[in-house]
Length: 123
Image 1 (cartoon, rainbow, N blue to C red):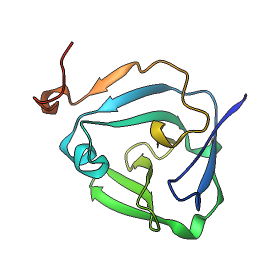
Image 2: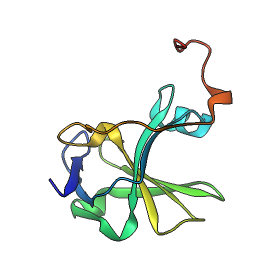
Image 3: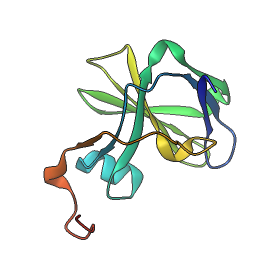
């Protein structure tokens, strides 16, 4: 497979992203925690030029969460689809949980570990 594919919870948004994945990460910043309702946001970082919404572009809403980034989600079901940096517009981070089939690569980075919740098991 030369690309990643995914969709939102309701299936209204479908996307594809060209490989390679630069890196995959778990981000523990409080914005990711709040957006995902979880301990972290998990992402695959890919080139923006290879990312395309194939279905449901009209359902994507982008939220400017800070001076550094925008978060894209489906306005129908609320599924988080991507995070894009205003500092690195040539890259986009797609959410690992929306990929079909499941992401098979390694997660190389943990970001903002200082905000990792105490209730999360620590290795």
